[in-house]
Length: 270
Image (cartoon, rainbow, N blue to C red; front, side, top):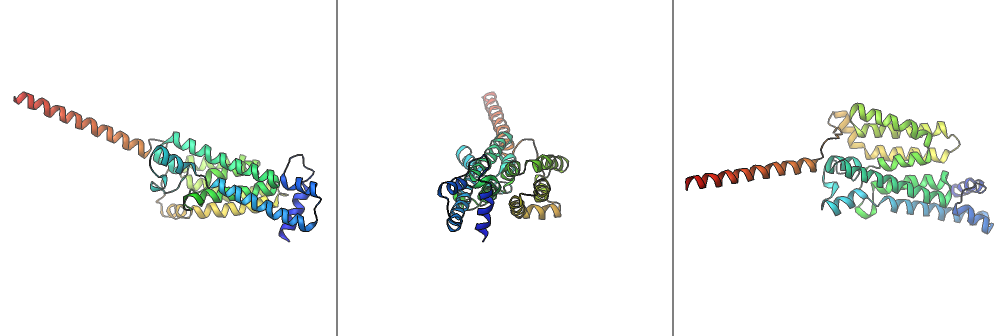
């Protein structure tokens, strides 16, 4: 019954000017209700698997291992995302991670939309690309919290909501310096705003609610620390790696000066 409902919804969009694989196959085959249901099931599974596997590609882990010979998950919050990268490796690396995370979300949604329309395939892909980012199959199911991916999902599925949520997020982070708080509040508003602006996109609103639950669940420790007053604030100064490098450089200079002073003293004694 559920897949037949999806099939009807997607079938109603066959006349849309945008190509999607499911509608094209229906048009070519003139399939029966049973075949439609099978095609719908295959299309949904393809959206889920492709989006999850794309989401499981984690740029933060790859870059930390390749260029820093490290694992971002051993630092700070333990999450493989842009915020922890900012704290650990600095702004430039964090910007690259953020860009790659939103890119993979965009790719997943485009593929989902080409398989099964934006309102269904794109929404399914949006949920599962975030799920792949948070529980990546390639990295023992330990990834990030999905905030960057969620931002792109909101932009592509509910642009009017994004226009409101972005300044809300920025304002909260600017005032409190808690990225987690801005992320939690923004994602909690997502289903409500999507329902207001896109009332007919019921499946997208349902997906937005599922995304909200997932992202809030991934921030459960942050919520606990916020309530206890122990949450870390974001800093746009030097990263831990940069501070460590500076400290090591200063220590090396001190050691060099001490060695030179010792050598001069020895020469004077001679």
